[in-house]
Image 1: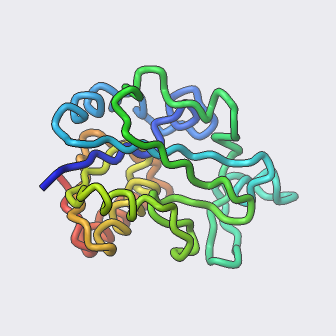
Image 2: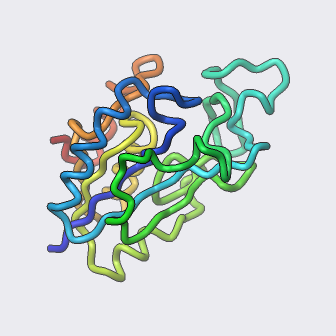
Image 3: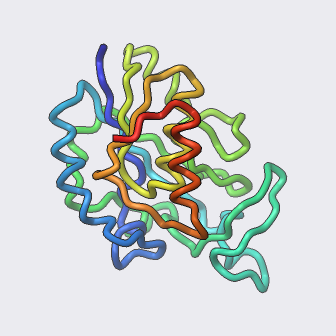
Length: 198
């Protein structure tokens, strides 16, 4: 079965020095690039937010980053502004081998809804189109890597399993935010959904 590597949000703002840096985020670039040689296709996702995005704490008067708010689609973490469309922070990390990518999926470009998963917006209904692309190419065996393990990587892998793909996460090529125990919860949720953690 053809295999695809789904590289989640390896962008400057999620790496050390970025607006929403994940500790050790730049340490996984070499392992990710190496994994590209073992698969038939590489898909990159890219967080791509307008400046007025509803998930940014600065767009909620008096709100602090990493607090919660309620959106029409459910609970939402309020983040520091990050990966603003066209900014240096939204660009892929320069050490990522982007030339190997077959497809780039941009997500989170709708102001009113956040998007963690590579497959759906956070309402769990609005598709990105990735599932159709993968099926058209018969890419049904998916490995997930990138940032952050406990948010966008986990949501993507869980959605993949729910859509009938074979989904695994190469944990050595991910790093987590671990916000209030989010890593342990994400790992349990992934296992419960049938995602292989390796």
